[in-house]
Image 1: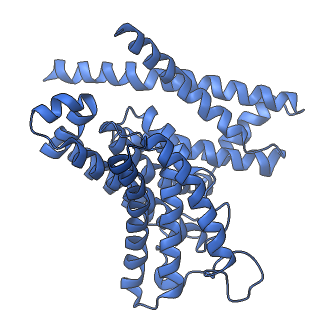
Image 2: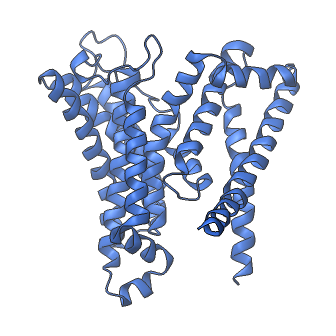
Length: 347
């Protein structure tokens, strides 16, 4: 048993920890260098990133707030990728989830406990339905899911823009945004006056549930078998088309739930540019975590910290928060190099 544990620890360190440390170091160095070119001392850039992510309890809470949608959407991405379905549409599915949750939250009157559940459920269904479009296109028309899910992201953003300009626009009609969700449709706060809400422990519970489903169930074995070799899986009697469809629908449902938790727990309303790219960041998180549901927890927290630190860069130093995309790209680079090396070795 001890040898197995030691072997697993070595694998985790070699496959995830070392590349993450290398990528994060490179990303922070690049961000500090770009800050220096903008006239800001590198030490000040790094200090601002730390303060924004872990400087006090408010910063830590903000890190966990930003980690929540990344974790939920990342779980969906990991499920799809494990099955060999390249779902690049988590951003669009998240937006549709937020749209559906807002519609139920602002336009449907329900009792307090039921209202929140209905809004979260609507977001989950909205994300799954949006993913079902790509699933139908793949199965019936042979459209590659990478292309379909990516293009659906832009359509989802356009639908959100239309909704907040017309059917869901606030009653005051001043700004292109929805009305505020009533308290009955909001997730409870855990550490007021911070923004940390009950969506974070919900995401943790789902991460453990997905981990068990992927690693300890027949369904998880079949999912991974289809992703590893669809032809062999079909020979074993696994309905590969059905399994891929289910994986994509579950993936969309989790991304939709991510959007619903953001509406019900953070913004309390829908507006254009609602998501700062959480769906795309979720792909980075899933890849950094090696498609492991358990590994997604620290990966999501790390990326949540990077996003929270980016907000501090703008607030404290006047630098663009888009510097965080440089850090994310550098974080992913060692994994990409490693995968490329492994792929070439199999040729």
